[in-house]
Length: 117
Length: 115
Image (cartoon, rainbow over all chains, first blue to last red; front, side, top):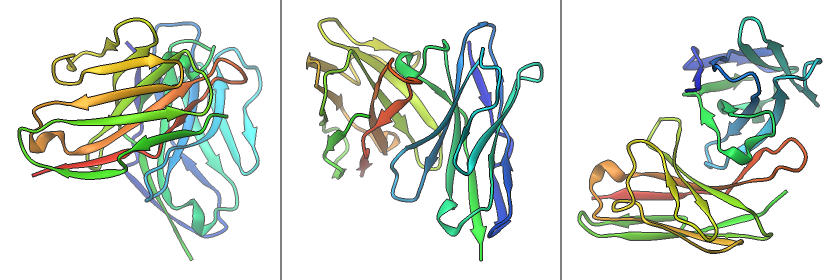
């Protein structure tokens, strides 16, 4: 079975600072995918970034980057130059194959990020 | 990307009643997923809805409580039966796409409150 652990229930960060949200995972499958989603207070789930288990380089999408350390089974999300609009819940998730989320995802408990002006 | 519409967006229900949530997608998708998000909690997969076959339920979820229909490749319904206050949650429909990185796309969710 797959398991996602997010150990930070909440984080306060000053605007314009970089922030790292932790995510560790556990799986016995050699092939898997890792995702990060943002859920603002409106409740919608917004896909941010994806990392496949066989990807050699860390994924980046604009201000989002994924610090993927396969041996440590960690996939931390890094947000550079944080903005007030980044305040939201952030969920790390895993799919059972590197083919992506079409197989359904297992979610972590989430981290509530609050950006302070 | 896929655009997903869910109805109702929110509802207040009485204990013992049932409510059906509709999910409409703007393109044909093979698999649709139903998630539950209890207050302040993460998302938990209820079931995978495949067109032309019965839904596949995750551990802890049963068809009698959460019957699902999938009549075609763009539509699905989830019914929450015989509701109790513990069923108060956000229910989210999502679809997967094997193109690109295959991320899941989510509807806006249906926020149910059971009194």
